[in-house]
Image (cartoon, rainbow, N blue to C red; front, side):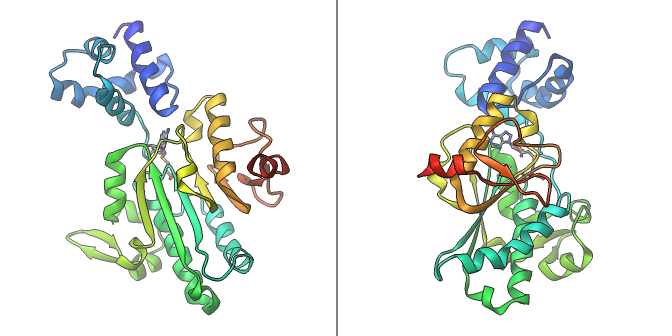
Length: 279
Ligand SMILES: C[S@@+](CC[C@H](N)C(=O)[O-])C[C@H]1O[C@@H](n2cnc3c(N)ncnc32)[C@H](O)[C@@H]1O
């Protein structure tokens, strides 16, 4: 692949997803786009790059961007954020008027494990505390990539996938085995709704959230895109809501709209500046 072709393809990916590709990652383009080249009968990445520059290449550009996303996920990833959010549920419940739902957002949900981990902990919190059973909960999962959203909606996981992070007790309690795979129970699946959304686009349509998980996606973005997404997410948080980032991610130095909680790394609440921006 010529460096010009790399620049064109990486430019499309950056524009469509925010993901920054470095020249040393050109092997990623070769592996992830090989099947697309074959399906479209394109001889090389140089031909693909030329096609991306021709009119009417919108759908192709979107497909290329989606193929370059990394969709790695697992249940209860990193543990601690889930322990922390579990402990926040009673506080959020007491702070909200009866009848209002508590709203959770897994922004960049990939194949759904993060959203379903939240559903499991909510169901178990309701079991343990009868007061929470009166509360309605909503979980929205969004992602750029359509293929992962289809999998998330199915709520069907392989043995390998459920072995990653899901305690056996929870597997037995909340999943049913179907032809060698594991399906999450309908009651939990119905708590979750999955929609396609690009974090770089207008997010106001999704409304206000009490908890946002946006984990292991901003690591792929450059600082201006990180700032843009963090400020857009801060604007969608309730004043006493919380934003959870991934273990390798931070909002520090990128925006003044979020302030870190002192007791745990990677969890933020809206700052006074965010509250002023929302008001
Ligand atoms: C590594 S997965 C993270 C999944 C989950 N949050 C976790 O931590 O396990 C990153 C996800 O971000 C999605 N993604 C990448 N760029 C995006 C964008 N601009 N808008 C929305 N989702 C995006 C990818 O499709 C991918 O599924």
